[in-house]
Image 1 (spheres, helix red, strand yellow):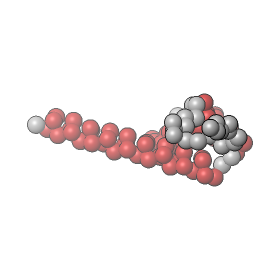
Image 2: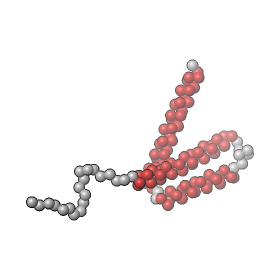
Image 3: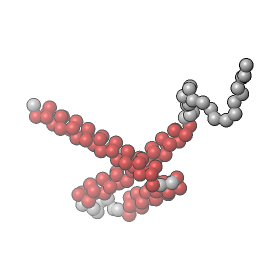
Image 4: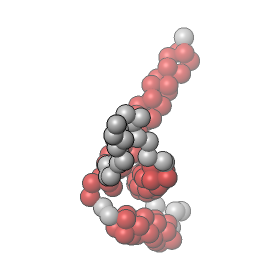
Length: 118
């Protein structure tokens, strides 16, 4: 019985984590679309990558306490998730731009038209 309860708890934790990821991605996409232009988004991705690489190279992993390591890895993970969400938003916009624009069949095209008179 105890194993089943643990499995259910782990499943609930995974569901919560998945919902949190989706919410973060959604929030990042909205922020990206509403606030940042393309140049700014590109700069954020490059800067975030540089920050991660710099922190990775300057933090001696064998010298820091395990709880600090845990927080560092969590922060690194969140930064990477943010960058992934920004990239996913960019890819989504590119996909949307590549889709053909479909007009309703009953929509009248603006401009001059030839009218037949009897």
